[in-house]
Length: 175
Image (cartoon, rainbow, N blue to C red; front, side, top):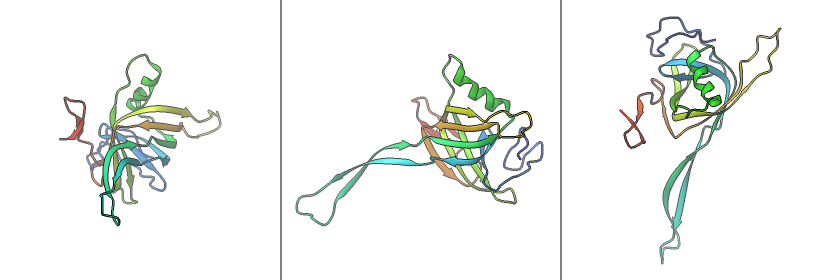
């Protein structure tokens, strides 16, 4: 279980992280871990391609790449008590535009070191489902959460690309 506080995953924590690393994916938003999930599916990208053939060259083809399409990511069986995370999700139910945020998916080893991280650039929640609420259970708070996003970075330190910001033209760039 990860304790909720203003934690910095690079060691500048105000409270201790209790790592449960087996089959856990942690979501970091705004520099602190906001939730953990036992399943993460759909992480992928599809790149359009155009194939051209040259006259007289029968043993080769030319491949030109086009636009990238990112799959929606679905997280399952998660827990959180982060109020900022819940406020972000609650924008789904309000009549105002939902804010896009960079969200890092992080995996740790048993020593608490980051093994791999992916930054979902410009992420927005598009679906949320709670688990069954039972008075005698200590069950899961979030059964499923689906995020759409505009870009993807991978890394090993500091959340993959946590410093990525939107430019004046609306694109994302590293700064």
